[in-house]
Length: 195
Image 1 (spheres, rainbow, N blue to C red):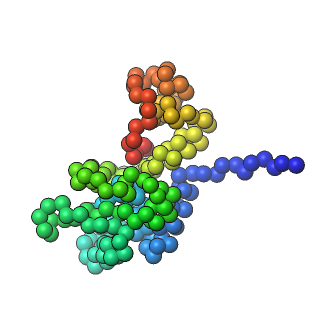
Image 2: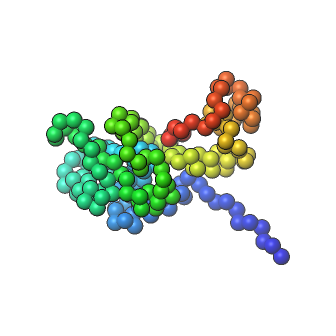
Image 3: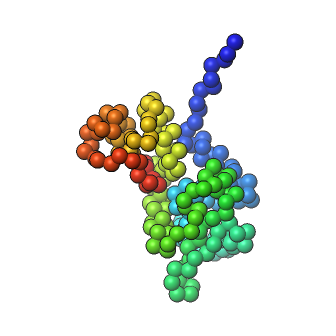
């Protein structure tokens, strides 16, 4: 006798809670783990101001200790953006940390041009400032979220995010060729945020 398969109980909140626990296992506090989770999922790079704002603290010993821990343990690399003492970005690249959240080969882990890193810092600003919504990071999260909420098995090789969002709002057919939104894309964009 075969039992039916266990129901899929995946939610973005459950996935993020599990990821946060995995990050905390590296010796980070709950607040630090929450911040690092946002960094890992949405940008891979941050500035000290963002950590201080997220944690509700001012620049001081706590933020300095956090950054020092990341750099000394080689979890992150400081990147000077201009003149000395004008601020630094921190690129989180430690592969076991990325593997702990299920993204060992994420594109944010790899080095990139400084201009691209600045764009990612701005994206992280938007994510951290808008806590009303849950931001979807990796493409697998987006797929599972929309599949779960729409109840449709999507062919993600040809369906693009615009059709997914429009279908979720009831304004698009399930076929990307009959998209009423007027878009003409045929592949999923590589955007790292869909709310």
